[in-house]
Amino acid sequence: MKTSADLKAEILVALAHPNRIRILELLRKDTMCNCELAPALELEQSNLSRHLKILVQAGILNSWKDGLRVNFKVSDDRIFKILDVAAAIARRETEKKAEALEA
Image 1 (spheres, rainbow, N blue to C red):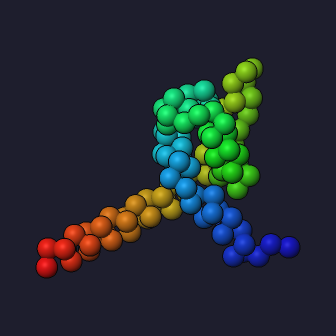
Image 2 (cartoon, rainbow, N blue to C red):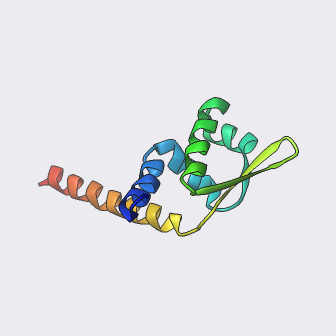
């Protein structure tokens, strides 16, 4: 049986790639089809599919077929709180490094 730490780690590992974060940022506003995501991210379909599969398996995205289209939606909008906190920490670290260079 997986522990709480195991489950948290699975989510964080799924987030730990720039392309997956870019996918989530695109899906922040609306549901999208993989056929819309690939050109928006300038990714090959096979590369995009691999990243989408990881996000779906981690429970971060839901997917469903609509004819030939496969649509994706964030399963829980709270994932964006994690991304927003990570962005704030990254900004703070960038500012600290800039201040150190100026000193």
